[in-house]
Image (cartoon, rainbow, N blue to C red; front, side, top):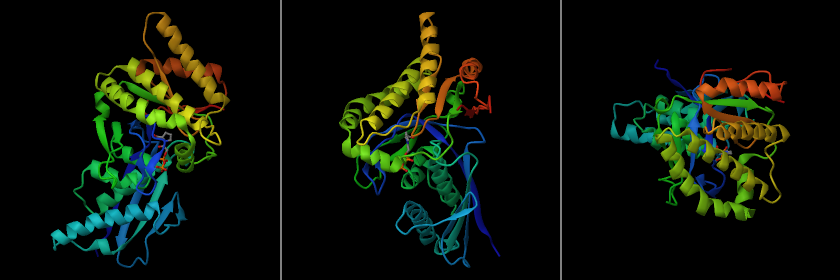
Amino acid sequence: MTVYQATASAPVNIACIKYWGKRDTKLILPTNSSLSVTLDQDHLRSTTTSRADPSFQQDRLWLNGTEDEIKEGGRLATCIREMKALRKQLEDKDSSLPKISDYHVHISSRNNFPTAAGLASSASGFAALVASLAALYQLPTSRSDLSRIARQGSGSACRSLFGGFVAWQKGERADGSDSLAVEVAPREHWPDIHALICVVNDEKKGTSSTSGMQRTVETSPLLQHRIKHVVPERMAAISKAILARDFDTFARITMQDSNQFHAVALDTEPPIFYMNDVSRAIIALIVEYNRVAVEKGGKLKAAYTYDAGPNAVIYAPKENIKEIVELIVKYFPQAENFKDPFGLFGAAGVQ
Ligand code: 2P0
């Protein structure tokens, strides 16, 4: 008997230009384009196995060993349905293919890092789900095409289908067909950039991104300014900086965009706070570190960025990572361990 099963994994990505707001909540179409770096270390990934079998009575999913309901019409159901539809198209074209699109699937997914801690577990999770179904169904589909489906699981997931530097183009069309991820540059283009994650708190966050961002869309005047007058220029400028390996510009834009994302969260009614005192102290430390470097005639040496949680991600050229770790350990002696997703160190426990 043939076993139809495939496993795929996908890493976490951390945005430099933040996605925050949807113009279509069902299709998950964003109000602005975004750009991220996909982390490439083994310990920040989701790994998913999918199996199709004629004996299965229904589609089922296990997340970290616990079964999760696949709600009808929900995001998971949508991704599974879309992937089955692609398989069906292949089967219709080639009658020699086994008709496994008719079978139910069982899917098991594991994260090797805390779920929902602002470390984008939904991004790697839905990217791994779509990638494993693409492998199961042996689809010839491009990553950008798959990103359109992963996007409907969780917006940021579309970016985790690529490694390196990735843009999610917001698109213009109402059906979402042009809202997809594209590679800006592969990881090898700029291997010198490393990311240091400082885990300030690994508990589940207070306001989910999904509900938080729609409250921002409904209530924040600053978001409207951001969408129209800020993000388009930043997308172009940071893409150019990445292609030119210009860390100074990359760092400046990354920090500005993190600041503006948290400003629109604060501009929401009622306001949303993701950073805490430790987050802000880490910002002060990086600002001072950069100030001293620039005063000596140099360039920026590090960039902080924060997602929908208090954990810091610090991007820096490899040569500065050791110094940054030493600084953080000095000012945050409680820091227990560090994770450098690009291979130098192990994510930080900063309390
Ligand atoms: C990002 N975040 O660009 C931004 C920055 C959080 C802050 O993408 O509703 O979990 O599933 O599409 O993708 C978080 O949003 O939200 C996010 P849904 P998602 O990485």
